[in-house]
Length: 146
Image 1 (cartoon, helix red, strand yellow):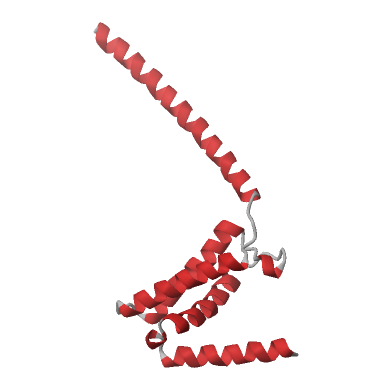
Image 2: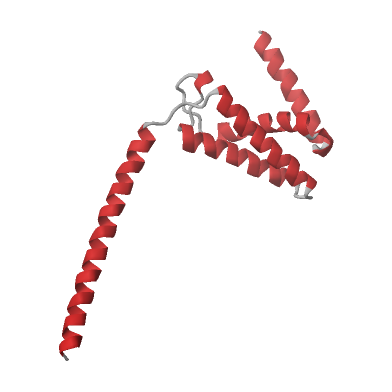
């Protein structure tokens, strides 16, 4: 009986101690996350190049592995957007301090990844995707000249 009484007390004490320490740990983690979010730095051209090339590399590997091209492109584009939002708060240095949303980054990533993939593995890019990319590129060049 004596052992049982002390073991219950000990378990309660340890349980309370563990609960308290986990609670304090969690509060510290939340504070660190808040501080980390304030220190986000806009994505540079070097960062964008890295993310774009990683997306293009993934797309080339996925298309060689018989993964549906549109699914592979979607995953690569979503990853591109998520990294820029997560690491840079959706801000690109070249565009100033404007925060871009997920959809804009996804669409931009799709275009950039296809362009890079055309340089890395042009044989893996479907003709309709190549044609759409070339049309859009001509349109962008035309708009920039105005």
